[in-house]
Structure formats: C-alpha cells, structure tokens
Image 1 (cartoon, rainbow, N blue to C red):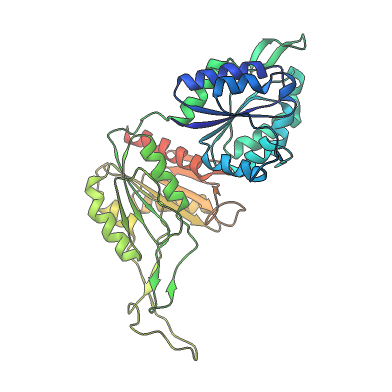
Image 2: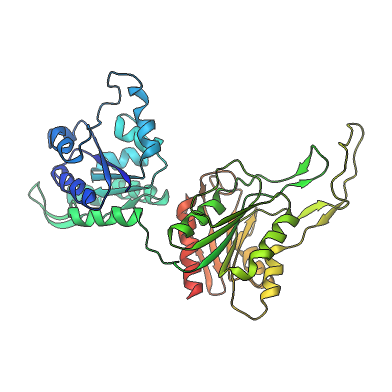
Length: 397
C-alpha cells in the first residue's frame, strides 16, 4: 500500500479527481488530497474527505502547531505526487519552481515521482509556453497522462479533456508497481568511490556519492531482480531490497568482492568510481609529518571491468555495463572503452556539465553500445537508472 498525494487544481475536470481517488483506493493505496484555492470552486473539500477519510490540505499557513512545515512532512512520506487535473497554470508553476501555495511547495519539497494529467482548452494545450513547460518537466523526470480529444467544457472540440479516471489510476499504479521484468535475474551493482589510503589520516579519493549506483540497485530490485551490491565509502543510505551488500574501501577490496560474485551474476553494472591509482608502497604505518614536499609514487589499480571482460572471453555471461565519467569527448572515449574492455554497454557522461556527474541528484548520459549511442537529457538519477536497466533487459534477452 502506497501513500499518494492527489493534487487537484482549478479546472472543470476536478470532479473526475474524486473518481481517480476512489479507483486508487480500490487498488490498495492511501490518498491524501491537496486542493488549490481554485479547485475548491469546482469541488468541495468535504467530497474528498468523505472518500479518502483524511482532511483535505489546502492552506499552507493554517493555524496550529507545525502547520507551516506540513508540506515537508507530507513530502517525506508520499510515494507519488499525482496532479489531476493539471491546469496550464499549475504546469507553469511546477516548471518554473514557483511555490506560492501548499501544492506547489509540496512539489519542490518531495522526492517522490510526479505524475500529471493535464486538462485545458485546446488552444492552451497547443500554446508553445505550455509545451515548453511540459518538456522542461519531462526532462526532470515528470510523467504525463495525455489529455483526451473530444467535446470540451468551453464548447470547443479538440485535445485537452482530462484523461479518463481509469487511465490516470492505471498510470499511477504502474509507476508505483513496476513490472517484474527482471524476475529470476541476478544483478551485481557497484557504487560509490574507493579510498586509497596514504597514511592513517589521508587518502586519495573522488567525489562520487554512490547515488547513481544505489539508484540502479534499487530499480533492479523493484523490477524483481536478486541484487547484490558492492559499495565504497558513502554517506548516502544504502537502498532497500538488496540480497547482500559488501562494504569495501579500496579498489583492491572492490576488485576482490566483484570477482567473488562474478560467476553468480547474470549482469554486472560497474557504477562505482574506482580509483585508477593507489600509493605504490601501500599506506604508511604512521602519519606523514607536515614539513617539506612529499614524493608520492602511485601505481595503477587493477581494472575491474577489463578483468571481467577478459575472464568472460567469448561468452555472453555476465552482461557487462561500465561507466565513463569524462571531461571531454565522452562518447568517443566510451566507445573506445566499450571495445577495449569487452563490455556490452558504457554509460558516458561529461562531468563538467551542470547537474551531471558526482554528488548531485541528476545526471545527463549517453548509452553507448556496439549498435550505436543513445543520448538522454538531464534526468533524475532514478530515471537514468530505469533507462540503463531497460538496455540491460534487452541485452539479457
């Protein structure tokens, strides 16, 4: 059972949102209705309260203890934010980060996926501003249930009518319950950085947070896979649903953990940012005293993806996915890595681009296979994870 925040904005299609709430309840979900001031002109809050058995939220500054941060509390517990109907006004506010009421503040505060069901006049629907706002939201991972065509409340005929409640409920349910397309498959994922110790105090590391690898592991588990995770040091909580987790620190420890589970896996996704170099003489037993310059000899670490490709030989198992975090010519370098390391898929990203790379919630990547390259726009990492796993599923077939 999931908690869905049902945002209702001010359009004639608001009456259909009552049926959407009822259908989602029949699917086992809890519904928290959030109404804009305009929505209450079309449907009374009492109607939603009778259906959901929860007080409707509409006033961001209602009196009472902690009422001014209620949108944060709801944002933390919601598993989906569904807006139906979504007017041109609310789409514009979401796209531009405006937070002037409870619903728009909730949108900025939640990390739950967002689904919107637009409803408006056909000319409004086709207006470039509305289409640009929807494209901007799509790039951030927001999904839409397209409006239907037919007779509109304004008397016109065209596209813009709110989708039928059954279609909206089905789309919401599908987002919360992804199909088990990886059921019976075994996926090994690496995540995070490695730390190469110089002495008991200092180390060589990188800025990887582990978010991308964790998103892939969590998405694979949601699709029914048996998932094992090898994680470097990170402050991000490990995802739920893992079969086993190996916590490692160095590149050598990650190499050993991956090779130990190599034969178990149907696919291995090397999302970790493994250090290329480590102190040649190992870590010093004592802290290096501060003084003059220090000469630090570095040695190459073992390349885990290359060793996996070499050990697989001409076989097709396991499927091998690598990452190429670059600062220039990312796709060309990824294509070269694909063939040199005998991988099946390389995820290339230019870490110099805003919002992409390390320690952020989003990423912009190109999926490089022997068959070509597919560029994805800037997306939340959970959406990038879904695209990567879709490729893995194709390769497994």
